[in-house]
Image 1 (tube, rainbow, N blue to C red):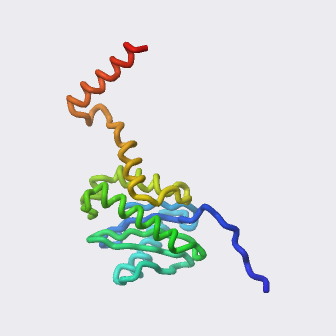
Image 2: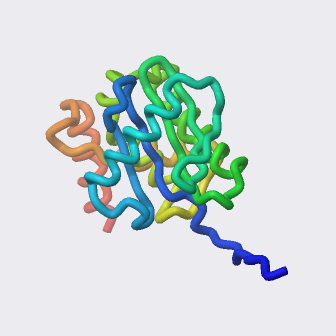
Image 3: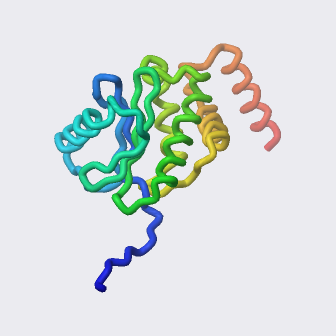
Length: 177
């Protein structure tokens, strides 16, 4: 028996996708070169959408990849790993992403709300997965970290009160030196 034994790897996630109810890309992050060009990525996304948008299951094997997915109102969330990847790990990433977005968007996880808060989505995905390695699976921690990173609001988007408070803090710290 000459069986192939795969070495364990931290690189479990190949891609995270969010598509709308027409199968169009709202968010896509690929962590390897399985689909190197945008044309190949879009073809894969269309294929995945046509295979999954009418089913009630949560997992699919497609093109040699394990795909876990979830739908909500007009969004389709996908986490993709290799065919030998643990489905429970991929599902933990998917649930963490969905629950984090649900908390950040105040339970209003739909296309319009997501498009208005894309920066939060980018930060959440970066907190959950980095380079294909799962970093966090607790949505509370992800929301907390995203909130911390979101505190650095540009001066042009701050209210007058926030600007004055920031100026007071800077003056106070400069006088204490």
